[in-house]
Structures are given as structure tokens and as C-alpha cells.
Image (cartoon, rainbow over all chains, first blue to last red; front, side, top):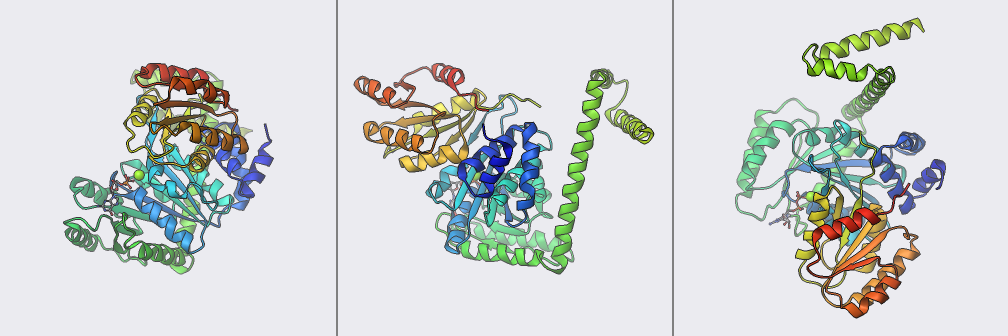
Length: 320
Length: 135
Ligand SMILES: Nc1nc2c(ncn2[C@@H]2O[C@H](COP(=O)(O)OP(=O)(O)O)[C@@H](O)[C@H]2O)c(=O)[nH]1
Ligand SMILES: [Mg+2]
């Protein structure tokens, strides 16, 4: 077994085997995962990260294949993380996104990886983010993250991506309602894919109307684009908009968004660390199970229990 | 948090087969058995398959073929696997493969060949029992 330092060096050199192994390590979330992330961190921060989210069947994976193609034409190297949900019952997952991207399996400058969400509460964002950092450290110019827009995953994407592209398609009526509710605020670019289908124009009009309704004074006004992922129509413009948004983030108003992004990241990391420390300590002192029992018996609610524990921990830390 | 390692499987279709019902049935069965299953889709070259094994860092590769080109494609795949240092990946095959070809395929490193009508449980058990425990 190679050392973590060697593995990290392999990643930085762009060695594909090392990249693949590093992501596995992160997915399995072993002790070494955090160390590896730390070793790689100084090499990150160069890639532009694009989140592609929206309902299943809207054409995200097909669109990504065309995005890779256009980005390669412009001389960019590309990493893709395609996430799919794990079954909450069996833990298994069918990862079918890369079927649509196999044309690029043998492109030396493209690395595609499928990831299951693994039912880790709050962990989707973390594992994905760490995997993004691996691809970033490996020197990929643009990293595309596909998530199914359902529930938490779609909102979590803002913790990972610089530019969030929300994809929808005509004929997914209810889905669009759901997207509207959750995702309006996080979208940097809207894409109506399957513009070749009937009702495409109506879907665009509907979306634009509801965007007007929710319009706030924002420095970046999310554009609404039409694409046909099957033929590549509209892809060039989509890539243009992605780079427009990147440029926006790199100056003025955008810079504060980037700062906020790092703030969130730091807060998340602190939360994680503190929670781990406290829970480990409770387990070591064998009081964790006792607490679980108490909550189960309704003797105490989890929030009060947490407040008390945190207060106690802070108090004992002061004494030290 | 479970520290049990997930078994990751790639189901791949080399050659020019025009349908993939069998491959998908096996993929779903392995998923329902709790594994993470990646599927390549139809008409994959040996190069595409081996690159996918490498990038996805799978423990297991299942090859499905109906076209009769296995004696040309499988050795090429196994050769590329070796070249890329992917020796610890468990490889099995399924589809339409005549009995007389089996010994040669096993010799090049394909651990098991499943004919049509093999119970899915047999394949699941095989994968569970033989998937390598990588560090
Ligand atoms: N008519 C039409 N079909 C499309 C288009 N883009 C994708 N599709 C089809 O929509 C289906 C779902 O595509 P996929 O990329 O897997 O969607 P995802 O679930 O959002 O990743 C596939 O059958 C695609 O061929 C498009 O622009 N027009
Ligand atoms: Mg998809």
C-alpha cells in the first residue's frame, strides 16, 4: 500500500489511478480521508465548479456530455461527478449517468466518476465537495457535478458549485412546481432542455413569468436558455453564460458571494468537528446510549439534550 | 456510520449487441443486493471499458455479450486490464458463450462464466464471496 503522501502526489500529477483511489477513500470516509483532503487542499481553488441539477429525465446527463464536448473544443480539461441516490432500504444504487458520457471515457483530459449518495445525513455535500477537491487538485479546469433535483440534494449543490444550472423540460409539470419552490433562489442559470418538444415555449414563458414575480434586486439576473441536448443546440450559449457567471463571481459583487461561500464552508467544518468531538466523548464516557434512551422515552427532547451537553462541554473546556 | 465497504460493480457491454435486457437485469439484481452498480450502456470498446474500470475504481467487472465476439474482445480487455495494473479486479462474464470457450476464458483471468438462465442469486453470491477486499 502506498502512503497517503504518495497518493496525494499522484493526484496532483493528474494520475488517473490515484484520482480514482483518492475518491474511493473519501467515499468510504475512513480515517485517512480527512488527512488526504488536507494534503490536497493547497492545490485546490483553481477549478470552476458547475452544478447541474433538476428533475430526473430532464436531460442532465445528456446535456453534460455536450458540455464536455464544447469545453474540450475550447481546450479545457474536465472532471465530472455524477451522483445518484442510494436506496434507503438496501444501500444499493444504480449509477446510470455515465452511459450518456461514454464517448469521453478514453479522453485523457476528462475524468468521470459516479457517486452514490450513501444516505449519510448532511454528508452528500461533504463527500461531493471533497471529491471535487480531488479533481481540482488534479488540475481539471472545469468540474461538473450532476445531482438529482429532489429535496435536500438540490439545495446542497450551492455548497459545492460556483455556478448552479437548473435544468427542466416540458411535460414535467409537477416537477417544475417543485423546482420552483425549492430552487428559484439557488439557480444562476436556468435551462429549458428538450426545446424540440411541444410546449417548450410555454414552459419558458411560465418560468420567466414566475421569475419576474420573484425578482429581487440582484446583481446577477439568472438567464433562461433553451437547449436540445440531443443535438447540441444552445450548448455554446450555455457555456458562454457559465463563463459570464464565472467572470461575475471574480469581481465586485461576486467576490462577496465567494467569501460567503468560504464562510459557509468553514462553519460547516466547525460544526462537523465539534459534533464529532462531543459525540465521541459521550460514547467514550458511555452516556450516549443513555441519552438516546431518554429521548426515545420522551423524557427529554433532542434539542434540550443537545443544549445541555454543549453547555457542559464548553464549561469543562474553560476549566482546562 | 457504517464502515463496511460498499462493493462497486461495473456491468459492461462490449461489442455490437443490439439489446441489453440481460445486462440490466443482472445490474438491478446486484443493486437490490446492496451493491453500487455502474452501467456502461451498449457498444463499448475494450478501451472504454477498461478506462471506466479505472476511473470508477470498481471491485468487480461483469461483461455481458451475445454477439459471439467474446474470443476476440475478452482477451483484449484482460490484456488492457493487466497493462493498467488492474489485476485485483474480479471479472466475470455472462451471455451466450459456448461451453468449449470457457476453459480458455478462465485461463486469461475471467473467474466465472454464467450461461443464460443462471439464477440471479447464484451471481449475487458469487460476487459477494469473491469481490476483493481492497485496502
Ligand atoms: N427530445 C429530447 N430528448 C432528450 C433531450 N435531452 C435528453 N433527452 C432524452 O431524455 C432522456 C433522459 O435523459 P438523461 O440525460 O438521462 O436525463 P437526466 O435523468 O436528467 O440525467 C433520455 O432518453 C434522453 O435521450 C432533448 O433535448 N430532446
Ligand atoms: Mg442523469
